[in-house]
Image (cartoon, rainbow, N blue to C red):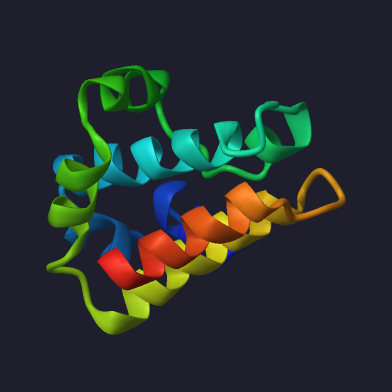
Length: 112
């Protein structure tokens, strides 16, 4: 379980309280894109996600990538690093990291 997972599940309540709903939606959008990056979504990728209300996952579909990055740009360097690590963990959950996943991770890291 990554630190962002603990933040979203409320175990680190102070940090969780500092994230806006828009930032939570943005993370959900990036996680959704990462899950689909290799053309297949498997249960273990989704199991590793933070415990987020389904409404955040559903409503994140309304965002696009650029809006998601914009919403997360104001986070601290440490928080951005945590998001990147969570996405990296997702990319490994199916046992291999594809070129598409690597490219997306690079795009996110550069975008943030």
